[in-house]
Every structure is written in C-alpha cells, then in structure tokens.
Image 1: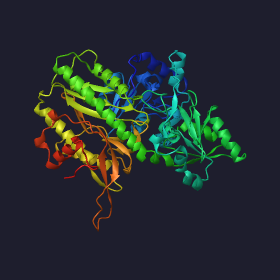
Image 2: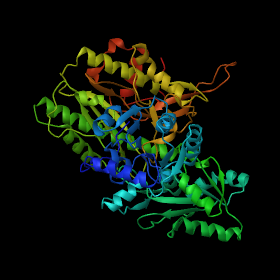
Image 3: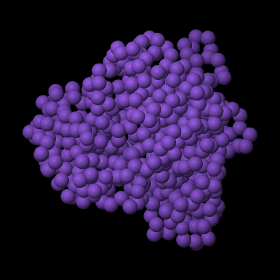
Image 4: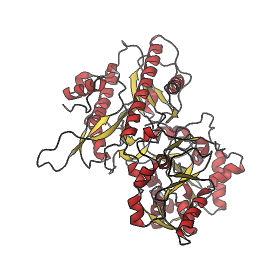
Length: 597
C-alpha cells in the first residue's frame, strides 16, 4: 500500500480547464468523455506532470477515472482514495467502487444512467485502454444505447499543447542488471515462450508492459519517478528480444537483446523481412495491450492473435538468485525503518520539533545511504488522524509531532537488482516508557493478528488470493471491523505486480516463488490509521499430506522482519500460537518456516 508519485508544484486545476474540455467535446460531437488515469504504456503510476486526469481533476491518486458530461463531472475511485479524492477534487462527484470491483467496471456501470440523461456519443482515450476492456466497454455501451468512440490523440493533450502546458519528458538512463542477481539469462527467459510460438505459429509476440520488458531484457531504467523501468515497446521473435527504446540511449545488453531506434515500425520491418512478404502473424495480450495500438497494427495488415503472455506469470516466480537479492534488499530496508523509527521517537521524546515532511526527507536520505538507487514509491508518513487517509499524499511541514500519537510509515526502494521493496510500520511516538491507550493497543493488536494469520498461513496447492485475504481479515471480522483495500499485491520490478493479488474477488492461484505483501489495516477518521505490511513468499510445505488428503500444501513465509512496536501489543489478546510466532519473528535465529502452534 503506498502513494502515487506527487509533484509538490502541481497547481489545483482551474475551472477553465473543465470549461475548455466541454467546449472541445461539443466541437467533436461528444456528449461525454472518459478520462483515464493511466498512460499509453498502461502504467499504474503515471508522473503527475504527464497525467491528463491529474491535470483536469487535481486528484493525484494512482487509480481513478473521470467521466465528464455537459453538466456533470464524476470521479470514480476505489476504496483507498475516497477521502483523498473528495479533498483534492472538490468540484467532482466522487464515486467509490465496491472492494473487488475495478474502476473500469465503475464507469461502465454509469452507461445506463448516462443514456437515461440523453447522452449518446461517449469518447474515451483508447490509447490508454486495454483491448479487452475496450471490447467489454463497447459491448456494454451498445447495450445501453451509447456509441463509444476513440479519442486519439487525447482531447486533453490537445488542450494542454494549445495552452502551453504540455509536459516535457525527461530523458532517462537505462542499465543492465548483474547476471548474478537475475539467475536467468535473456536467452533462458525467451525460451519460456518457445511453446507458445510453436503452438500458435507466431512471427512475434508484442510486449507492452514495461516491467515485463525490463524483466525479459535484464535491464532497468529511471525514465519514470518511483519505477525501475524505461520507455519502450518490445517484440519477442522467439530467440531474440527487439526493444524499441523511446527515450535515452541504448545501454550494453546481454545476447538476445537488439535495440530498434526507428520505432515499432522498424521492429515490424525486421519481422516482415524474415516473413518473406507474407502478412505478419503477431501475438498480443488483449488484457495489457492498448486498443489504439491493436487497431493501428490491424490497419497495417498484421494478423493479430490474442494470447496469454507466457512471461506474465513466469516473471512473478522469482529465481533463487532473485529471492536472495530480495532478501538482502529487504534487510537493508528493515534497517532503514529501524533508523527512522529510532530517530523520530527519540527526537519527540526529547521535545524536539519534527514534522511529517522531515520524516519523509530523513527516510529518503537513509535509503540513499543504504545504497538504494531510488525510491519505489513516495514515502508515506502520517501522524495521528492523518493515518486514516489510506493514501496520505501531503505530509505536513508545519505541525510538530506529538508524543503518544500513532505514526504510520510506508516506504520502499530499489537496489542494484532493480526489484522493489515495500514495508509499512505503525508505531507510537515517544520514548520507551511512552504508554499507549487501551484503544490504540486493542486496534493495533487486531491488525497484528491479521498480519500473523497471513504470514504463517498453510494453504492447499491451488489456493487463491481471495482465500488468503479471508484468513487475514478474520480476526478483524470477528470484532465487527474491516478495511477497504486489498490485503496484498505482488512485488517485482514494479512495487505493484500482478499476479498475485491477495484481495476479495481474486481467483489467481498463489504460486511458489511469488513475492507479495500482507498488509491489513484499520482506519477511522476520529482515531487515525493502523497498517502493518510485510513482504512474503510461498514455499512448498515440508509436511507431506496424510494418506487420503487430496492435495499437498504450501506455506507463506515472511521476507521482511522489521520489529513490531511492543508498546502497542496487548499480549493478553494473543493466543499461545500467535505469541510463539512473534518470538520466532523477532528472533535472530529463525528456522526456515514460522511455527504453526
């Protein structure tokens, strides 16, 4: 759980932007427009300066689309952003989709409502919408009596250019990852797709997801804030990866990687030359390829085959070398958290003036000192009631922190292997003798019990993210409490990787070698927030199932070991097995698997 990239200089959008957009819509014969939060790479986290949605609405969260009509402005978000959206976009009607429901399903659910208002022609930025979502949206729009039309280029980008407010794209660097940290060469990674090429008789496979390109090429970059990726498109030819670099210069790369500097057309020309003049047969993943790119390729005469990328799941199963590097990176991140916690608690205990913004600065400094190449997301530092804002994006630079307040710190970084870290701790401000209130201890312990349930879970082979999510929520459900975000997300080249997803509605199967978060929380506006986040992996259970048991079992194993604040734990509420887990977690001589009893 973390925040989206934020630019402190971002101004609150002026109402004239909305007026100008509506005028542009009228000139194009559009009655409504859907403004996407993503970009042409389908990034989840888009730099604010490049986001059309941020420019129009002022809302800086990572996920949330806007629907604009002649007299309405609706902002559709998930449960992480309800409070933030209302604060940052006061002129918009904020709608929150139910947990387990996508933002896209949220605006598709508006189609009948829009039709009832007399709306017929709806535009959408089809260059930042997956083909599968475009097809689903077209079907639902047609059923509601609407016509869904692509708007490429974006009407908002046209307006920004005319007003002199178009962003400049920074030229980033790209570099290779040491082979000792990857555990698999580029050629070996490409071989994972061999069966698909043979089965579908493909000339090539289009790869759009930037973290997948970086993983395949064993390269990383800094083209985007808080990401280790680079601007590119790629085509796999079977034994070669053609990388169309869209910014910066080509780095040294392993055998199997070739750079194409004259755009995707250049890569297709190379494939066409091998095809001997016949139409190219190109695979693509409709769930992750922009609809506009699909239509462009079809217009060029390319035969497109919708397939599931063989690399999408493979990249989530970390090699032993990747897991070893991640454990080392997580240990360095744990030490950073320990240093920050000690520093801020001692300062507050001495009566020194420290603010949330200063904690953010200190955390970033310590990460750099630990060897981090960059942050994997903006530091989230929330004191007191600010912790109730799940994605608290504006750290206070004026108000001093107070002893006895809860403090929520959510941080992450990239080290030399280019794989993200992510960790959240909630602790009590003040010295060792600072006392927590009974309510602080009760709520913290409930969250801790949920985290323990996830971190020591034994699951049958084939268990899904939704099933693990339920185990984590159970202690809070028993108390009549819950939280409005998912329990966990995969972690890899990006700090959010999918699969796996540990949340309500997730049917993705948990696989050995995947790395993901377990991050339950509780949030109350009149109290504040508590969240505990640890990164974990899945391993095969050592215990063989008894005869007659139909399935083998897996175990969840923690990979991050930043200690929990003992001042906030009510040990009387813990079971003997939960206390045994805590002893194991805080021990310096841990066995491979956490205790179950």
